[in-house]
Length: 128
Length: 107
Image (cartoon, rainbow over all chains, first blue to last red; front, top):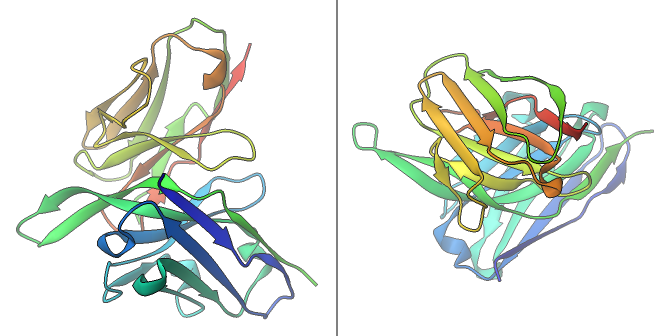
């Protein structure tokens, strides 16, 4: 069974740091791009970041650039999100998701990815 | 960033109804659009990708259409388990962006 299990959430003070983990199983982790998506309480979904299979490419939403770092360890089938300089507005449930290739642009040598498998999420609360 | 706008934001319907949710992109995204269903306290679930391709295991009463900037999700005959929030998402360019969600409630 394909499964993603997040961990590492908790209560942290503004300005603090937290590292989220996502353990993958049931598929060849090293063959997939992976994403983090978050959802603030009572709000919609916000994509945060994703990372290429070998970690050589990473993309971030502007609101976390310079504060969050996505990484992975293919030997451990694990995805990470290092969150620094946390703010109250980072309070959310953080989901790990698998990116599935959904198209290819030959001119740009660019693949398009949608998120096909999601974990259950881990809650991050930033508050004093 | 590409802005995704869904309509309506919420509405009520009855089991057996046919319902349509609309999603509009602020610029053309070809067919690089996905639809997700989310129930309270649960993770999102992929329903449709490439605007109209049904994800494996998703009931055939769900369908999607559109390309460019205008897209629709249709549920042909509402079942009790379909009452949830639905999100569209573009994966044409970074940052990947979602619509604000459409909450479907029981009338």
